Image 1 (spheres, helix red, strand yellow):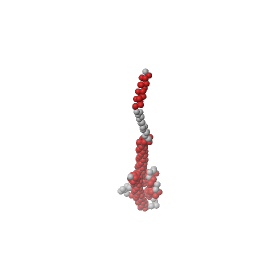
Image 2: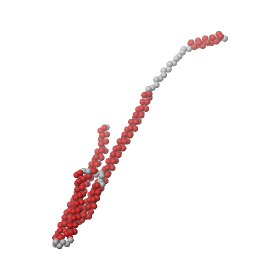
Image 3: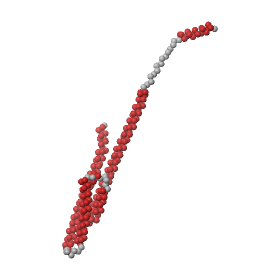
Image 4: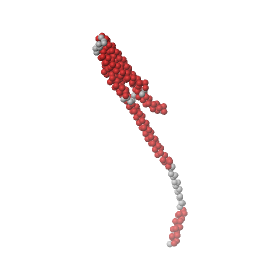
Amino acid sequence: MILHAASIAAFFVDQLAQAPVQIQCVQQSTPESWVKWLLPTIVQTVVSLASITAGVMIALWSFRVTSKRDREQWLRDQKKAEWQELLRAATQMRRVVSIGSENPLTRAQLIRAGLKSAVLELEATAASSVFLNDFFGDGVKGERFYSYIREADLDVEGINALFEQIQHLKHPNPEQTDREREGGVVRTELQAGNQAAKIANDIIGLNDWLRREAATSLETTNDQSGKASTTPSSESTRSK
């Protein structure tokens, strides 16, 4: 039995001695760099942020431009409306003094009856204007406008005085003959008619002047708006 166990052991030892020992060396792969792994994500994030920022900037710029354009348009509309009101009031004065084929004395009577209220309306319209600073803020133009107002007011007082004188002359006066009295009435009526013609010319001149000033004011406003709106386009064209 001992000899049999020894022979078995010798057999296994001999087999182990004959079998070559094979050792396989497997090289472990080196892990990739974390920067290389994160680079696509970083690039994508930067691109996304740039796109978002550009979108926000464009939106803000568009909002500012639109708001400015709307505000300028609103100011132009307000100025135009106030010019229309001022011209309407001045036209009412012109209606009073421009009666067409009426005789001078009738014109004087109509001026006496209606010009005072028309002058007050024009003055009130001017006082309520807040967007016509380029006109009323100009010392020369403002003084010229209000000189028209003062002259028209004085002219009405003068017409009133002449008609009072006519009424006085028509009353019997023992110190005057009928011929003298009638001559005085005719001369005074002629004077009132001439005064009415002078007032009419002044009011027509006021209307024509205000129309020219309104056209200049509104044209200047439109030109300034056009320049402001075209400037960004010109700069962008040059930048391209």
